[in-house]
Length: 167
Image (cartoon, rainbow, N blue to C red; front, side, top):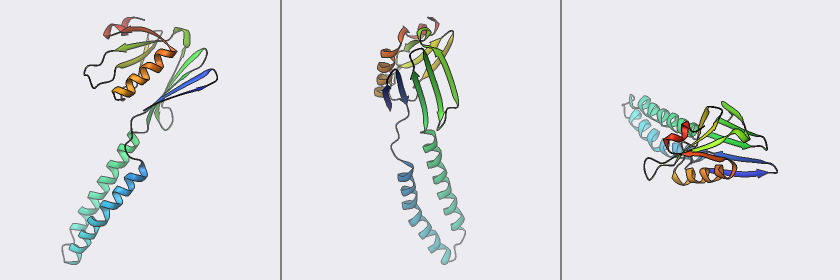
């Protein structure tokens, strides 16, 4: 998903993975699966097959942990802020864990063509020999939308694999 917003002289582009389910809906799925699983496990435990209870608990713990991990991975963001004289790139989960700041007039965009018709183009922001890839987790439609927004803000340095050596 790509969100483009403008506030006076500042343009902000947020690229984030598509999230099909919220954390609340994941918890409801876990609850819906827990009731019959634990119900069956308790029934077998009352019939004398008590070793089923730890396995049912492990199964639900593994499912809950997997849902949490996927939800956490989907919180990853690339925030690109264009000020009149600077370009700020922040990457991270919930808070920026990596950050770059470049002079706007020295920053350019390089575009690598997609390797497969379903892939998004590879997009990199370049300045003074440093090359930062953005939006690599996006699907084709979102990648093309990000490319369009970046082209409105930056000059294109080159296309293809040679684009990485253009600046």
